Image (cartoon, rainbow over all chains, first blue to last red; front, side, top):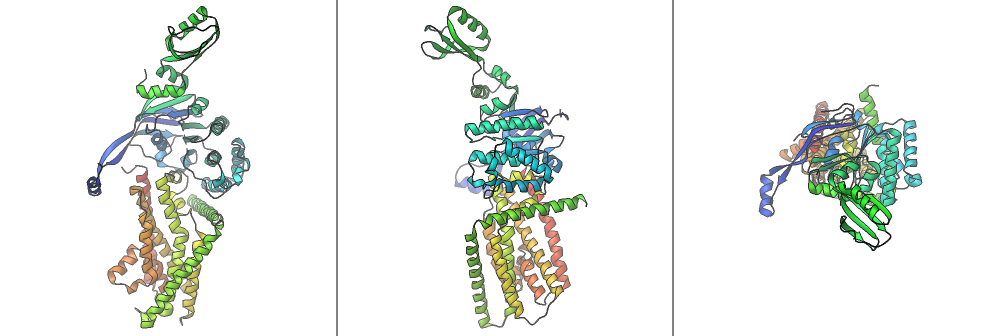
Length: 328
Length: 269
């Protein structure tokens, strides 16, 4: 069902590609020149979800899961094979100007700034393409330069910027027209940790200021933890999970990690699986439903100096999710 | 103003800004200007030597006298310069963008994708060819007895523009093929090779080749026809055919581009 109030609404979306099939070897290569056989590869398989205005959603999945294909359908680059998509009330594949003016697509490893010129010159081009009135353009440009801490970097030729600086300039350029929805494909790819963090806080800020919806794919769990209350996990073209990040851990990781520091050394192996231990500090892996009971027993039976209960790292959770294929 | 006018103006503005960017880019590489100038002079020098050799043996080539052939050579070099200035770099960029995946950025902009993709790259130094060509053209004209005035100039400019648009159309159609097969590297070499044939009026070639060089690879329209308009060979019929052919070719090219971009996004599958 298409929800007209949602920023993004996708119903039973499917994308299949026809790819040429060819066996190895010269004979097969010659044969394929004359007669090419095709095979259908389903990249996205009956995907349904919707995103509310102002929501930030992390779109996760291993390489080849169908993330980029889905983003391309949402941004109008790919025509769905079946199913329905509405973004801001538009059918993206029509690429109506009204729609394109309200969205943006940023691909982490693909640049659009002029390589030999300062980013400011590229901003002028963007201004002409989106026909931004001067006052709006200047306001938005200055705000972005400020929020992204670009400063005088916009006056330097792009080729002289570091990868992270260039990415910030790319993001600024992609947001000059103040889009209502952002599709970000690996926006922090290859950046160092402080730069990733800066981009993350910028995105959170932009979302707050302008109420824009953001859908991003990333391989960095820190991005997801910092930005996304909600994640959609896609695997082999199908949605494996859609919900809050905390629930993801509950569903896929049947255990928690308990780190306990005692006054006296002790063997805690009968309380759970010992992952790591030093004389007084032990890391235990325990079944999720046992957490409360084990914690209570430890506290009553030992002299506990410190005790923490943690969900397993999100990377592990995601890995477990992919491994299981279905929610446990 | 109507919406269409607005879009048109917007398109011109975008092309103008890209030209500005192109100029700023190229001014950083002034050595390219010198190299380009040497290249242009060598090319035109070779052409002139060949012409001299021809006229050692004969007074005319299929009714074209020596100064008239100079005019043809001037137009040939001038059009070559225009191609190198705007057509070739943009077509190369489209292919590069398709290979790198950055063509996605062209399609997600709220402007006409064909216009944006066709007028993004400008190589100003290639205009040296255009200037050298113009000099040869004027030199050839100065040796002709014919008088000409405003009508000839108008005919010349309009047929030259139409011819250049025709070459753009052919090249864009070939480039658009990249939407289906991705790698179209050889298009440029193929075209450069064929283009050399335009150094002489297409009328000197056998009929089958003449037809090919007129309607398939529109060198006849781009070079011979503008030269004819300056050497008293132009007829109103020819002007109408040229402009008509341009309109049809442009419409076909536009249709093909739309099909190509639709195929790129998998809409036609």
